[in-house]
Length: 219
Image (cartoon, rainbow, N blue to C red; front, top):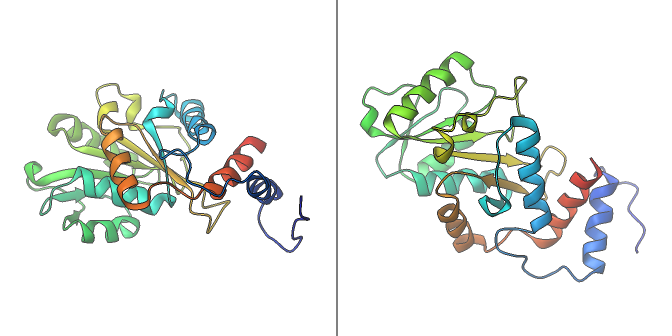
């Protein structure tokens, strides 16, 4: 195996796993949802941290959280509708623009809302109120933990009445910037979300996925 570049700032496990993947000839497309080991890790991570049970078949590895946001917005909203976003809307603004939907902090007409976009960094009181409305009006819920899981291990899908409406987005970009490895998981539309992702990028880069698995396996 080639020597690792000591000037790299990446975790050694990432580099070593990537080199091993190249050594093993992993330069082709993976399974379209992503390699099984990495999808299994996502289910374990969500289960251990939030008590939410998922199956690997409900997980799709994405080209970073950015792709996951675009896929969710494009598939779960209608042009001209609204996304309720009580916190920082910067990360989802591009996807909303491309999907021709508006970002609002509060709804004046619930029938115009397609989705709520929430993160663990949002105010708990606001999140709780919006989830109650989501249950009543059947809004889709995107729970984006790419910026951190929060301190209280809360997750909207802990409520069984909401679990079918919740898409969880995550990313490994904090430890693997530039490798473009994220994931989306859950909801009754997980298959539809996966199919749309595949229509754009087929699968996330093989070597990046194996590098990510090397990182999480070390943890």
